[in-house]
Length: 505
Image (cartoon, rainbow, N blue to C red; front, side, top):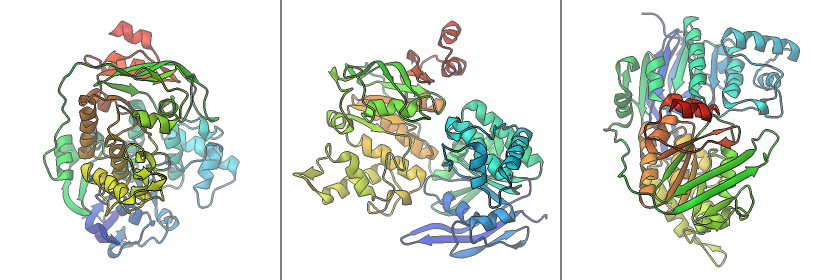
């Protein structure tokens, strides 16, 4: 038997009222791509933080090539040969690629030497980067390249990747997988966390499954179906979203020739956007990250004001009014950035429930907050959407990304909007939670709401939407019925070739 690269034995981590990991044991071999699977709140993030030196275990041991491994900080982990690409990028828009890479290194070389090294390594691994480009001008896929190259410059033996494809196009995913397979061929190991189970099946040769902090199974993903892996994660049969067909009702959301300049130096301008969504209808809007999704949600939510007649709700002009007034009328939105935009990190879940639910849930009377009613509203969201947390008193930042996503989406849906706009509704959530969120969106539409789903997950759009439109460089294509739409046609639409897709139809 060869000595594993990394061996975990009985790792346990407890927080007040929560056991994040309990007696976790598994090995990662040299040159192995090992998947770490589990639903939101299963303990994946805590576990990799212990491996990377961000968190200390309460019990258990780790061994690196047979020797004791006890990193007290990420710098020690990196010195041993462990690198990590986080789900949320830690880059500065106003700095160039080389400067951002230097900030993430313990002992960076002179910037000119580093720039040459970035060019060499990025080309060698099929992830070409210009070290002089401003990060604010990069696509989401290019930003991830910066994070990966920053890790590869440290010559790691184990690369930990947390949800690496959540903001990538299919083409960018293919490029990333070629790079990861090249790393494996060089003898490097990868610990891969993802809720996209088909990717796990294509890339990984072993998988460890966590549930409620414990190891509940191990598998060869290549011998399993995506469904069987999902059911192993949740411990029960997975139900697929379903919807009863119904005729759409009256127009509830209408956008006419909406054009807005970018709100920042690195934003995207909106150009003559036209949208019509009727009661009972779900419009899916797809697009590669950075093509105006955030700006479109801001224009619909009221965070970005427009011409009075540019946005109408049930026939009434609302383009000139702000988010609070639009919420009062029933137009609710859930943005992509859950921590900092959709939720205030240091506020409790009760306080975050108050932030958007004050009017529609009648949580404030004569200027005074009814905290008992506010707490009960937050608890209803937690229970209905299976948010894994000790209670409504917990700060938003303490939740895993997927659990916070469930809370944010649930908070808006439970306010019974007549129009709901969501951006990336199932970003970073497990298969079971994604199915539950999609079912909730379908149920909301079935109850007579108009729903706009902005998503980079094309499978998600095809599953829930009645019609599809593509956002490219701030322009929105004409909507098409989802039924009969092929991936080739969608790809052309995403690239802005609407006329070509007409010919292909």
